[in-house]
Length: 62
Image (cartoon, rainbow, N blue to C red; front, side, top):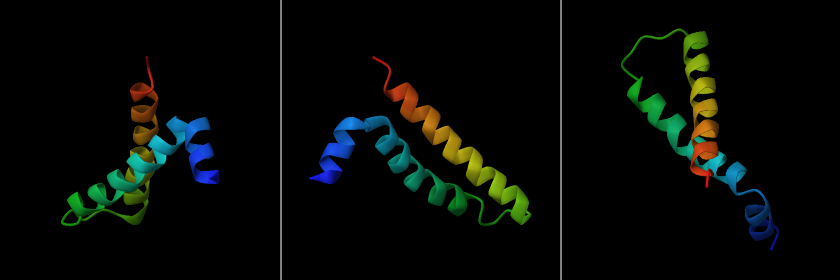
């Protein structure tokens, strides 16, 4: 019940979470052969999470 109510009240937040959950592993898989410093990889992960939020926001435009 709580999950259904939360989803109906915050669809963009849920979309942001779902997109981030799928985008971050994809990024990590794509960057596996690139020698990045941990700080660079962390910056890419944070940027990807922000991008997922922007995508969720744009998807919510109506």
